[in-house]
Image (tube, rainbow, N blue to C red; front, side, top):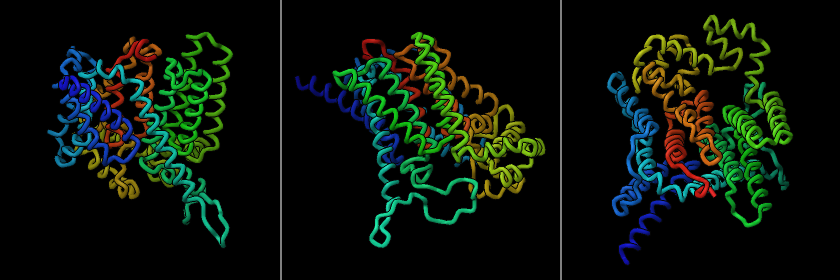
Length: 444
């Protein structure tokens, strides 16, 4: 009897650490490394004490790719000139080595907790969003001559008059814990997790009306927080994936009128958002002066692109392309990407980029520069693999498709695998959503 209680306790402890890991992702990155350690230790203990908790090992292509994606970065260490930087890079990416095996071996064990782990992640992001709102209001209220005044503009003098002044309710001033690009990436997944609950009739209350009100209230709140975070990648991924999801839903369920209304609303919101949001100002400005803009691109006049058009991503991407052409097959190595970029920034006299040590802000280019064509093809196989699995195209498993879509779009704007905030989120949910399959009985 005591042994049985011990076994039950081990299971519960591991579930707790799994949920704790999921819940800590939106918050401070210092604690997340400790939570991963506790999660892994509890998983090992669980598999030792309860041998029936571990699933049988079968050679799975998705698992092989998950291991291979880390190993190619390890290979890149050997021909890197900057060994300390290369070793630091694979240390940052270590969760891509340790998380997938645990998820794969305990995939059947996690089935019964699948929805609850997702709920914990959504609640954690809601709490993080509420804290961001609280801080924004706290900084926006001031006493002046005994009167309470609301002013959300961040004090200071800002030379760029083309965009609105910094505001406590927007972008980096709003996001308390993480860079807006990463926090909004979490929130976009949360929106679709709620859609997943709706599609699979996962209920918190006995009343259907209460469930629907709760779910749509959560969706509205999440979208509002995403709006405040002002991440272009989040806007694009949320609207585009919602459009694709809506089209698929309409075609399958034959609800044409409702579907047309949703799709039309998405298109209208996209157009309005592009025109009014300051994060798209420089893009629209470049489109208005497209002849000069295209000439600057053709002439590789990077300073003009930055100084006249306020666009730094395109020069960075073009410079990354130059490095790729010079090191096509195996790249420069895992640790030399930053050094090679700095050399190019210095050569083209791009002082701002050099001083801020900008990376490529594009995971595709970052991987291609580091590992060359061979590594890039392995990376692409890993990234797009879930989209080629027919079993994922069901209402019980579509979240992995959404997650892949989020990564595919966000990787265009951020080198997310270079940071703790990105790598742990990617490693955890890629493995969790791909390996922990659920059926109708579990999802409900």
